[in-house]
Length: 247
Image (cartoon, rainbow, N blue to C red):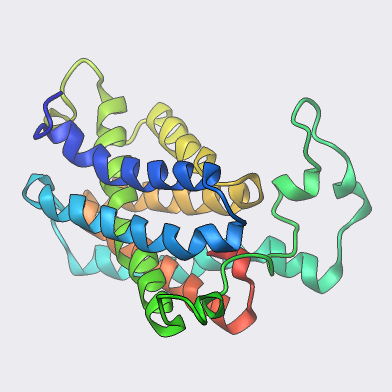
């Protein structure tokens, strides 16, 4: 694939986000220290690549009914994402959830999202650094509400979903939003796997709703709107509850 190919245009932004995150995992310093530069770099890299390849993206029709479905579905997706942690904080960890998942090395409660999410990125960590907490928070919301929804939906729904539909043809030759259970399983499975295990239940619910929107709306743009709304609502939830682990 050439650097200007449609495939590269649809994969590069998300690959950049994941690549910077991978580099951050090996960078010296503590997690809080790494996150101070990781999020701004991811934001800049993602925006730069999305802007560079913007003309390669077809966001499809934006019918009012489909947009309304995305708006209504966003709070539901947020609720399903944060419910396991809320239940854990409210009622504690049930005994049956403490058992280990065979062959996985993690407790069942972690896989189900039954965990306290207070450990994570706090914008106040920017105090006394080269970035003020206000700027750091703005960059965090820019990444959360614009860069990530565009990068992920362009890749997962715009590219992978159409590629899996018929891999014998180039992805853009396949219609957007055609339903196949195989496609649903592969795309949603990949969405789940790029998240940490504690988010798998939420990612599965989110990915399933996003797939449904893609199939019913035939619009990548509707999927982006849905994703952006969920992420922005999640950001508001994090600030209100100080559950920093959801960032």
